[in-house]
Length: 246
Image (cartoon, rainbow, N blue to C red; front, top):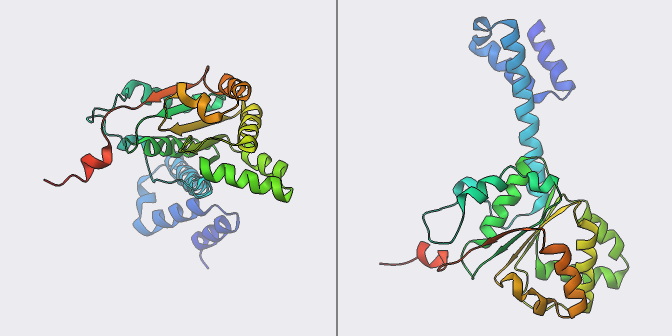
């Protein structure tokens, strides 16, 4: 075994897979002859960093269980939807997540709310944050099941671990007592520590009625609405424009 292969084997044993592949490529292409020692070290370290970053990103994305494969770069600002590109770009750095702030996205059916929310979720994964995507109906159904089988606190702990919780289709049906109390507890636990995206076809001012109990609704909205970023999408359905037939 030559020295180069021994070096590659040691890199692999140390789980430096990106570096091992980069070193192998340098030997096969002869590019190493054109690089200084400093450039070679930089090349190998960059390759290892990229490989680890991509593996972590893939792991975070799988765990999030997004509804859409979406990216902020794919947003179409030519459609008349009241999207502020400057606002989107400011939020793209995900510093609002590090500050434990929330994001509320509202708009009519088919306007691209879920895509936009998923795009922010993917962006959070790019920045190394753990994300959980869940439709509101499934979230509250799982909470009721957890209440029934005694795993409620464990379930809430699992939700709390995520830096970003993305709740889609909020308000398709009114909340019952168990759901609204659980929603309050989730938001109380996450308030100013972890971030939440809530997506709804109902304007924020109508959420009191969806939540139901006025006192609990006040408590929920106090934690959710007053210090959050808001994106209010308007206009016709994007689906109709995308699939229109001449």
